[in-house]
Image 1: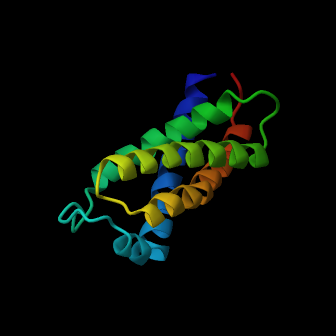
Image 2: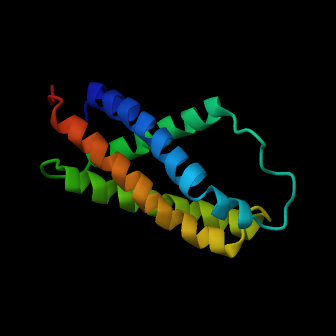
Length: 139
């Protein structure tokens, strides 16, 4: 692994993660998420804290970049997509079911659908990160 490649992948992936998150979870499926909350009330912010969403996007992009960079063999856009899709699915399946099991925030439908949507977001981000890293030298 090379620090420059990790930083580039994290920054590019963070921007992509933020944008895809907005497009998928706010615009396309915002109504679904609003209808599929658990019995907890007053837990959703009227306006999300964008700095926190951006920081979370960078963190997720770093995870995706590390997973892509440590995968053996030559890097391709397809491998970037599949690696990131699996990482995103497994990560959010765990998080969503931990939240479902321990809180009243999501309902079961939301806990099942969210990891599937994360396949799309993380896979797309992984493909973008892989495309950028294939153009970035190893040294």
